[in-house]
Image: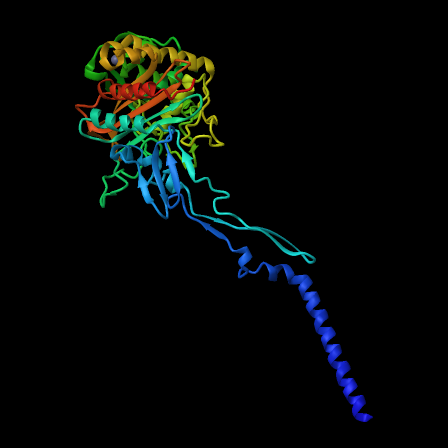
Length: 479
Ligand SMILES: [Zn+2]
């Protein structure tokens, strides 16, 4: 009897321990159940590692022409045309050297599944499929053949320098038809020791002395500050701040307005005008035209332009007015300024990807009123009709004449870090077609040409005309 009682007590004790343990478990389950179910070791919740675009994607031009493709079976392939590979390298990219390229911009993506958890139903997992959030077929806005024409034009017109960039876009939609940057290389055979500047997208990231293309900015400043009727008598040399500023070849341009000064690219009128406008007004216009800001083009931030005027002497303010001194701009900045003048004051931001949600955005940093834009359009149109057409056979071409081009050339002295000019010049052209059915703007910057050979009219205009004709002949512009 005694033994039976003892056993019963032991049994009750065991049952009690069991219920206490169960109660503890239930409480802890309620408190920590979600944590246990979603432990990192739970296979249901494994993350999916999506290969980068470089390892799995197809990139085509606007016409569906393959520029890059890669997957596990095929490996990495580029266009079959070696010149197209070089001409489109800075947009498409390679194994990772070109920072601004589409391939480099796409980082490796890790996709995590989503789940819900509750005490009754436990864990409910929505598995992710590879590619759910990643568009692997990218169609670019560029035309590969037009890029090839542009690449060859830089080589043809840069007197052996083989450096520079050409970028052209639709100033109403923002679609970039052409963007090429030299020096370049074949992504199938990357060089061990590339030339300096090879990895830069010169149109978006590099800055150059703008030279006479900057006279557009000085003109806008004059128009907006009551000096639309400015007159100047050019004797070939003018004293500004006690030192001479010469016109090219000391040409005596005679009596000038802003328009005829632009036509002949007189240095005297724009340096004197800048001094009379003064630092504050020039700095304000530069700021209003977006030169002190950057924009993002499909995730790539444009290079920072350089503009310093506060410490400049009177003579240096004169130099600023004609696009020299320490001013440096990205070719893309000049392209957007052309876009603003062409498009009634509104600068559409360039875009490289078809049907991207950001397409068609306006650059809110550029403030140009529609009246000033219209006057500038008249001035820049007269550069062609009253000057370039009589000085450049490329500008007289019948197709080019039919495009009703507006624009400005420049020959800029390359100023080094110490503020001295070296013997290399940049040849510039910035411009656009004023035709409603051909809203195309273009920038050409042929970098570091031998100073004796560099000329906006002789080199940059013919290069621009070849590219504009290629765009025209490709029938890709939808008005
Ligand atoms: Zn002059």
